[in-house]
Image (cartoon, rainbow, N blue to C red; front, top):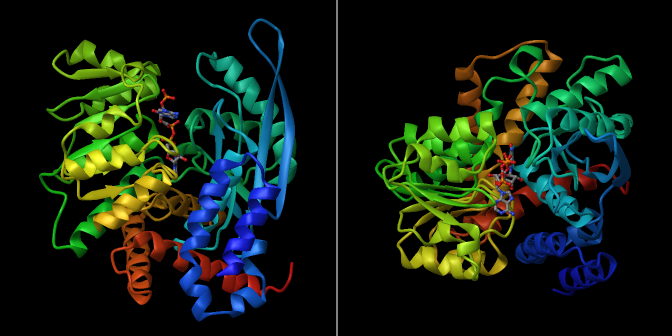
Length: 450
Ligand code: NDP
């Protein structure tokens, strides 16, 4: 299929050094080959050349003052990738590793993820190379205010609605919202992940992690199995990891690991969730502190594992939930997981498995839920927050959770049906990419060459 090949070749030339973006685009476009063979009209409308190009990219300087009175400078980004289905929607990431390529990869994935939810949301993403670690509360606030002082002119409740991601949680959303309100004089649903007493949705904080577990449940049910009694590996120790562990425990499974950038905790008795929340949501300290209350648990420092891969994936278990960051699970990790009998993987993070790892999972035909399907519960519940804001209502936890479950089941069904339609019933990567793409591409065709 020269169309796919030529588009990828052009992309590599026009976006040099954006390796994560190229990786994400290659995965999607390669999956679309059988669709283009059946439906050549997508080629006639030149959809893939259009879909890999963001509608708009905003790059800006963020100048802020640290506690010592020194002016510091970071890069700010917002990529408004695709608005065929609705206002741009996608989180903000504050992490020193962020580049324009990172934001483009995340924005590109977001287009298809948002389409899979069935809701009216387009794809976008933003962030900064600002490192929140070690910063005082005052420094975080001044950075967020400086960031919003530029971003506010590009966003709005019907144009672009950012949310959180790595390094952007409830505290940062609060500071960002305060500055938006000060600059515009408007109290409106321009960000999601807001505090519960000022426009936030009950259940939003939990949604990505809970959704990833519901997706695993859906995959296992389709194979006549359940999560009950399963030993599970979870990576990360942030928002997504914490609520993945919470839901796993509620459903009778046992999460025995979590990790941060300094190392991995392995607690064979099951992760102490109250302690994890205290360490990460309140004290914001390294996971090593877990040993203070649980000396029987094992701590494996990141530096003690310098080879190919990550310690968290080398522990014996039944299921795995990568919830930290992109490319955190390598081909060697995938081989170790499969050797250890892991038969279900549901991705809470975005693109956490390398292309080689994904190939191994697909070849083994295990239950493998790619991030753009399995972690879509977060953005879906963000859209529910937008719906509550525009109708000035606040729904109950039961209502939000019921909708989340229904949305995750629908996403799973769409991926499974589409995978079956194209002759590879266990390949949910193919199913997710084709189902998400079709919805966006059909809307783009209807809306003409814009
Ligand atoms: P948080 O900032 O709350 O947590 C991230 C966690 O991952 C932290 O424990 C962090 O450790 C760890 N981590 C980050 N980078 C690395 C790294 N390079 N190596 C090892 N560990 C790392 O972020 P979230 O939980 O919100 O996001 C996690 C993932 O889920 C991301 O891929 C994100 O894009 C994705 N996601 C998040 C959604 C949401 O609603 N929040 C929605 C959909 C997807 P440390 O603190 O030491 O840096």
